[in-house]
Image 1 (cartoon, one colour):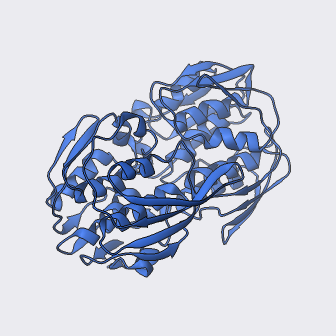
Image 2 (cartoon, rainbow, N blue to C red; image 1 turned 45 degrees about the horizontal axis):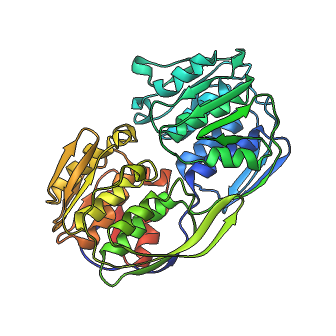
Length: 434
């Protein structure tokens, strides 16, 4: 499937973006390991989260739904999973693979985790290494890449692990393995990353402490079923926050968006660039802060992105690169090596597309320099990366010619219905399969 976009336009109206992908994954995982029935509302019915549902169903967990965002997970307890009859195919979902590696390292059975071509190219050594320190037996193919083979029946030991990079997935992997470890498991991270795992563990009745930036838990506890309301995904909202900011005449309200303090880098960065953003109706739902966000068009200016905001916006940079391309002046991003190992090398992928549109940019080892200016048109390669596809779709609002975005099938991993929702707000987008 490809997107075709006519240049120009503005966005107006109100929308609720799909549920947060990170929280949707974790709600299934912890609900499956809890005692009792967990009721989830607002679940993201995207391909990545559905891969997590399928994996736990294959391990004997009774899961009803999802239907219109509602799921019931009949938990089997920490030790109730069964050996899957075949390798677990996690599609394009790196979150599923890295978190499951931790959960499954402490099971009594052997299993194998695999995925699509993109996922099989992503580095898993970053979770294999700490799991080995805990006594797990997890091995990958060349360079620690999937498929991952996990040998069961291992007694895990709690460890303290200093994360070599800011990664919520690695942190979560170690903590989830720690549920099965003897003694205390703790993690120190070099910079704050999303804390959905810690929040949700507490929501399921498990004690997790955070003292002096050391996150800890004791193995051998129990999880109790909970009701979960999944907020709208700020990573999906980011495309509309940028779109309304760059397109003259735009005014949007995004309702029930998660504003977890470890995820609001995109709001902070856009505000520094001069965006007109207002948070309203702030509240806490199920332990997660949410708000309605109103965004109106405003002239943006290029900035040096603060180092402390980089880990808080790591998934939102494709959208922010489009904001930078439409801003006045130069935007500089450093310290974002993590973008190199996402669904694609997002620095290289975005740089190629920006160049296609005539945007001057310079690729750095750990970031990029983008000179704001005029956007032309052209054909964009997405490298099968959903966020690259959506980023260049919203770029059309400021383009002077038509944009074609190739290979957009993966948009459904995080944002099913993106094209229809965008069209309803005023984006001149059509999806074609010819």
